[in-house]
Image (cartoon, rainbow, N blue to C red; front, side):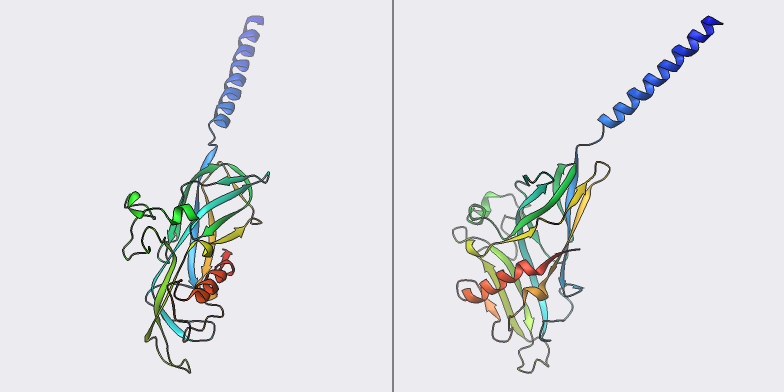
Length: 250
């Protein structure tokens, strides 16, 4: 009887040991990093900005979009202890037809928020597009979104047709073009108070909205229909200043 009791006790200890070992192994195997992505909607008001529909600006003037692309860079996560976690070498060339933008792997944990540049930092802005592989957003694009390597990139190319009638009762018939760039027109988009948590159980997606209607705040499309930045710096600066208010969390 004593021998049987000893055997049973040994088996019980072995089972407990196996369970502890298995639980520890499962815990040790939990990933310490997960994929992070932006789920980015480019909108006009509450409608997805596409190249087929006719939209209205804040005054009711109608317009159509032929091209809308913009650079997002220098993405920095703010960890729960307040320290920065920069996502190095991550540059996005966003457009309305794409919503998912992978940012790579980041440490599991809590974050107070994040921030990024609309545009490019000075060093990146004046790099040579030919130095990047064709798959990189900073490589030459077709249509181009670069003024020549010594001048830099166009941070936002937003163009199409607008209704040029004084009373704004017609259909889009005239060109508008907002090509905004240069070092001093990059803008920091600050979501440092938008907390989130990356769990070890799944990848994480940050939902962001970018509203072109807000980009056009206080822009009279009939008289302020075009800028290549240097030829109309006041309009380029007005549009760049509108970028910050055009972003919100989904």
